[in-house]
Amino acid sequence: MAITNFIPEIWASSLLVNLRDSLVYGQMGVINRNYEGDIAVAGDTVHITSFVDPATRGYTRNSTTVTYDTLTDATTALIIDQARYFGFQVDDLDRRQALPGFVDEVTRGASYNLAADADTFLVGEMVDDVDSGNELGATTVDEAGEAYDLLVELRTTLTRTNTPASGRWVVVPPELYAYLLRDDRFIRADASGTTAGLRNGQVGRAAGFDVIEANTVPEDSGGVYTVVAGHGMATTYAEQIADTEALRLETAFADGIRGLHLYGAKVVRPTLLATAEVTVGGSA
Image (cartoon, rainbow, N blue to C red; front, side):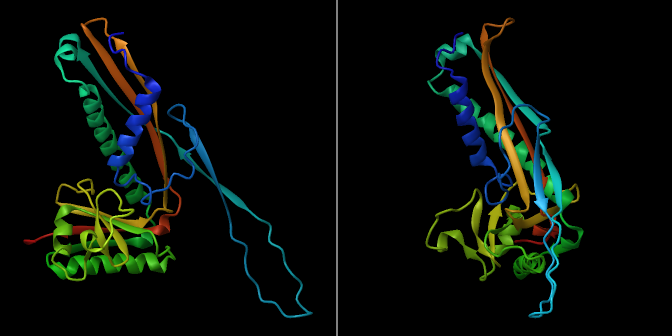
């Protein structure tokens, strides 16, 4: 083994930290990791149990017979059914001539790509499973005020479904963010007096949302963006770098390095998400 400093446990931990630093839809606050547990192989299942809320009834002193509901539960399965890997080789000549740390730099690149894959999967789950009553449908933003008004509509939709006011987020593409920047009602992160607790990509607050700018907002071939807003309670996510290893390649004077990322997600509270199909037009 030519790579004498390669320790799988340490590398795996570092890669996962880099991965989580790159996530937008997969970061804490946008999702939760309440049921992550231990993930060993693709196909593992995390079982989530929920209970039906007991009913409330009127009471009259000395005359009401109390009725006791029988608790009923339901089980939702979070299936770890996504598996993505990276692999690259380090030629002996490159290894001798390269500066120290180049393998770590390549690994960070792999982490970024794995994060992009996971984000694409996560937002797809959110869009597919959002409560149908929370889909605002098609809208066009071609004036500064309309971007903020869209956020207000998303806010109203989530408030109607009792989404907690604290912790709401919305992810917007750069084109939509450009319109928000022209609206005096938008409070930018750099004017908030603190950067404590800002999420990956967060650029400010508006209409009760943490506004997150990202290039991973879904866009169809016609240039229509699916803007998703919600709360971290809506979607649960689980992931693990299941395996990393270095091996001597038989067909080259090189070492091979590879890693496997396992993950899955489940929208457990669809009413805590809202979406809009947004066409951004004109000049921002």
